[in-house]
Image (tube, rainbow, N blue to C red; front, side, top):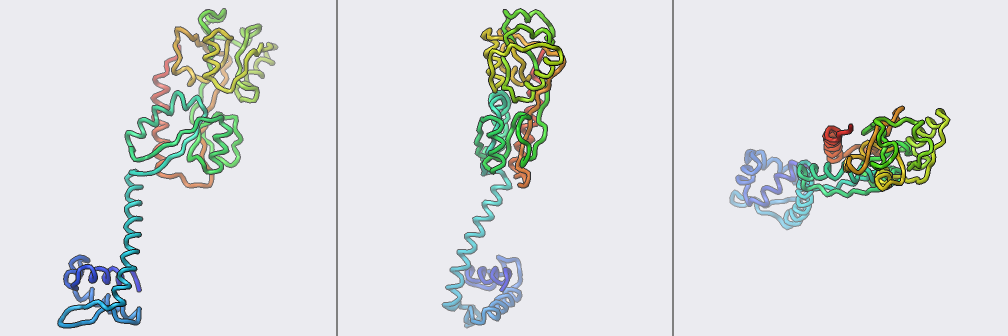
Length: 301
């Protein structure tokens, strides 16, 4: 018993005629008859009684046909599902990111992606980088976007963005008149720092030690956006990822280049042993396009 024989049997049963069955299958009557005969031989019982030039289904044939139809319904459902996946008419994408990207980049990317693929549902989780990493490892997220201070074991990590940090402060800050801020300028200034374990904080601490400058850290926070808001309120000066400046008002928050440069790096992470879905591939293309446009539009003096 093979698929072609079952296909011929189904066609004869549904058409009530070998002639019409042959037309449905774009085949000849003799070919259909041969397939039916081969199927009967394989099953070792008759499927049709031949009377007056016609085939009359036996009771066994009717029972078999009911089972075949159930199988075909399942197959047709699978075919519809596969077609829907080909057209991206359905699917669910699970994305996780550090809060900065969830505020300034991914909303625009997701909106563009949804316009291109309206049938795809998206779940966006904004979490600390290590939590995003853990959810990628356990398969709860299809893709994550994190800072470079995560444990990179068990994930496939690639650089998404990299840029030199900028100093931020209120217009009334004594260093606001400077065009460039250097490590020595930070001496005696209340400093709003990222958490002590963040790679850029470690790099800044190292520069300060080399310059024999003691940073006056008055506030610590894990988020660059919080540094910006605190600086704008006059709480001190901070060093942030340039992406954090996208939605800030230059009239209310002064931003100045910092030398020597301290690099901020953003990573894209995927499960290492799982093939990337076509939906994820298309989404990541949108992320790259969105990031390029975002960086072009981010004008820093």
